[in-house]
Image (cartoon, rainbow, N blue to C red; front, side, top):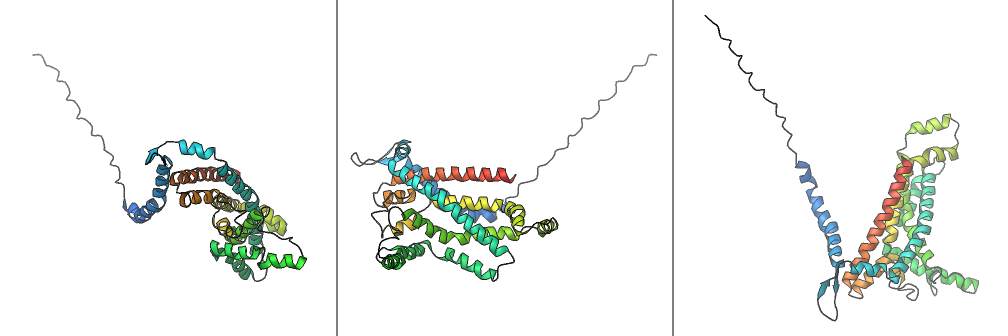
Length: 309
């Protein structure tokens, strides 16, 4: 009798364990939804609308608005009025911003030091001009600068000749820079002072053990710790410089022969829109100056972060 070999039964297939992905929790978006809605309506929508306007041109003789693509941008890049206003603001930025930040840094270091009496009083006094609206500040300084009234006129009358002329063509940009510096030194001082207050005390103790004096402590401890705050203040100042509008626009009523409608890019865009009814070209000017501002601010931030690293 022969026996037949029985083949073993095949093993049952292994069940692969299915990994379930955790469900995404959308509750966080519900909390930020009100802000995102307001942000989209008040910030993103105007930018998109301005970009759409910049692609069209109002044909006065043929009637209607026609799509012109990048023709408005080419016109802006060849516009001498735009580049004149841009160069004026760039000069303002190169001179006024370093002076303002240095003054704010000195004020913050002085208030942070233990040698200054009534530091809280000086902190409030320096910050107080920032609480004054820009229009009020421009009006106040405009009357001080007046050739026939105010402090400048009194000084000229005392000296017997016109020596101090803040509203003249040669001094107008410096006069505006003085107003902006007076307004924003306190704001930047507060940024630097806040950064100084979070420096670990161990660093000052280590500097004192090494025999570092007050000046050496500033150079080796405080200034390196302020590098991030200085970058932030510089970026804010760059953006504010390219947005220069209130001060020259208010002073234009006192010196209309010096400050024209294209004294700054923002004034140029404003008068194109509300004075010349050129909404499409005004939107193009705004888009171009916005892109230039973003590029310069990004380069400053990138260089500042590299130095910090």
